[in-house]
Length: 353
Image (tube, rainbow, N blue to C red; front, side, top):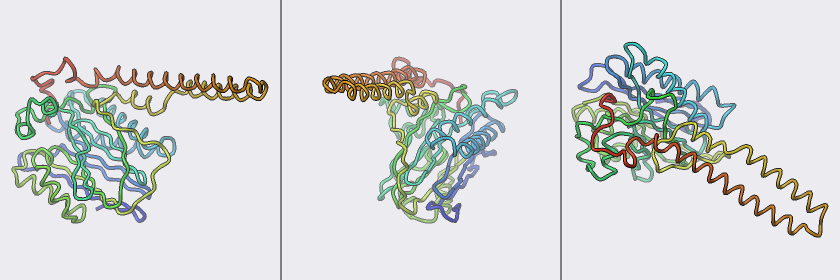
């Protein structure tokens, strides 16, 4: 278990090779502070020792970048930038015998009463709240897309020969594609981050039962890993459990909303978060000149203020439209299985965990 002297969080992290693998290509991260923490699971791929290297490189870069930027960026932006740094670190080392290596990543940053989740690949995050288990991520995989299209059932997907073919991973291209969103936490929440060596083997109803036993986090992680191994342990297994022990205030910044259109390029996400600075300056200028005009020309001040309000509404609509266009431009590339490109064949047999 990991707990700082002042942290309201209690966590446990365990990873296991499983029963059928000789190398553990999973890695986990749990770092806590007075106001929250950073947690992550990476599931490497590439064969030999490449997957192990990719997972550990990614988590080292993620943790270092996120923690070093704490005085310059808000947690949502820091987490997105940290995922991009992890992506570039994997790419830099994917040469020679390591060509083609990559890793999935699910990362959770907790800031007081809020959680920010970043997700690339098919490692998963779950929330147990009030006895109900909610899956917080959608797999970026060929099989998951077939389930969403209705071509496969969940039961068929679990045993499908292509269940480990991921459609998105760190190390695949210079600009990472990810899902990023935030949500409020409550006292008593229990969160699980895990690799598909757990979620692909143990049924979600059994995950809910074992998480609901409310054993200490590290002991719960051990029980989950034991369950996966008892069912054959076909893959490496990693579990991070986080318990929220106290209700904390929400941060002052807005949380990124959940997008339902799949992973998006990191620069598009950061652009949407930061907004349009020229538009902000233009809006301030409009307000300034409107106030000055209303003071200087009091007889026409109603008209001046009305025209200014119309211009501000138009400016807001323009900014919203621009942001939506940015998002739409990214989506065709961000969704290799979307639209007319959807296929019953797997996109890339090299992306096997």
